[in-house]
Each structure stands twice: as C-alpha cells, then as structure tokens.
Length: 218
Image 1: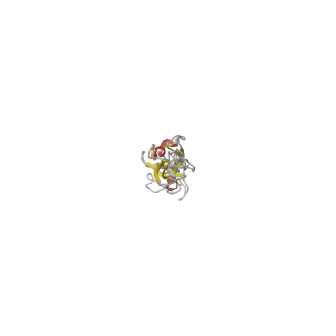
Image 2 (image 1 turned 90 degrees about the vertical axis):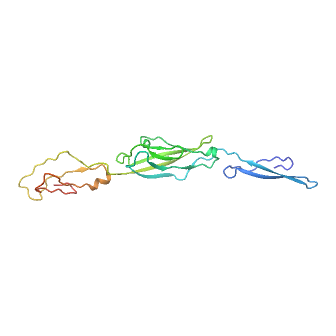
Image 3 (image 1 turned 180 degrees about the vertical axis):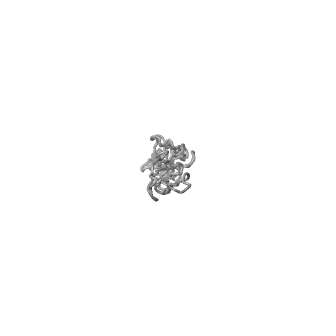
C-alpha cells in the first residue's frame, strides 16, 4: 500500500485454495498531531479453475461374481476438486473402449458404477476401463483413473462329453482288469476342470465293468 495515496496493490502471489479472504486494517494518521482513524478492508480472492479433479487412488480394483444381477453396484469412484464450489462440481463418465465397457454404467453425479449386463466369466474374466472426472469450471479440467474388475467363476456350465456316443468292441476272452476304453468330458467352468468325476449309472447291473472316477478309463 502506498502511504500517501491509499492505493492498495498486489505485491505477492494470490491463491484462492490457500487463502481466499483477507481482512486488512488500514490506518490514516495525521503526521502533525498523531491523530488517526482506522478502517477494515475485506478483500475476497476470486477463484479461477486452476486445479483438476483428483482421484485418491491410481486404480480401483474390484472382484465380482458372475452371478450378480444386472444393476448391482460395482464400485464408488470419487474425485475431489479444491477449487471454489462453482468450479468444483465433478461429473463422471466411462471412456467407451470396445464391447467390455458396455457391461457397466456409471452415475454421472455420484460416481457409482453399476453392472448393465450379465457378467460371463467364461467370455470375459477381466474388465479394464477408464473413468474420467470432469469439473464444472471454464475451461473444464479433467483427470482419469483405471478400473479393473475381476470376474469370479460360478458353476453355471454342465460337463460335456467329447462324443455323444462311445462304441468299442472287446474279446470275450478279455481278462479281469483289461482296458476297454476311456471316455472324456470337459467343463467350461475353470474351477470345475479338475473336479470332474466319472461313474456308470446304468447298464452295468451285473458289475461287469468298472470306470475310474478320475480318468474315465473303463
């Protein structure tokens, strides 16, 4: 402040986020008699949109069963913005990227991500996509975060034999323990691949044949 003119100038750096209101007390004094008067000068710093929204994590990692219904909550994504309220309102959207992002929807205001399709572990065991946060200032500032959804398997597929019918011939002279044939089945559920068990359920009433429950060998 110039003592003779009463003009107040900025001589330092202003930062709304650090201090957005200054209250100055100014004296006017008579140099001859020493009499003085005082006045309060309130200075409000006007914000500019200079800070982008900030996510508290670099990546959001979620594990979700493929059994969850459509509309289930996946995660709550949140970003903070230190600008003034008029500039700090944040909205969210998912960056379109292939077919995988169509499985999810985000509420633009709350940042809550929901499933929008039935998840399928066998087709897409992993989903990775980007969420962008956009503030309300001018110009708008943005930031992004990666979301990784790991889909866990459920037992939703039946075993399938490699053939509908198995046929073979064997000599009537075959001894006890002779190899007849081996049947083979697969299961699309990864968690069940090593858990398949084989058994004969009909046509073997006289117990002529035996099947290995683990290998499928008769």
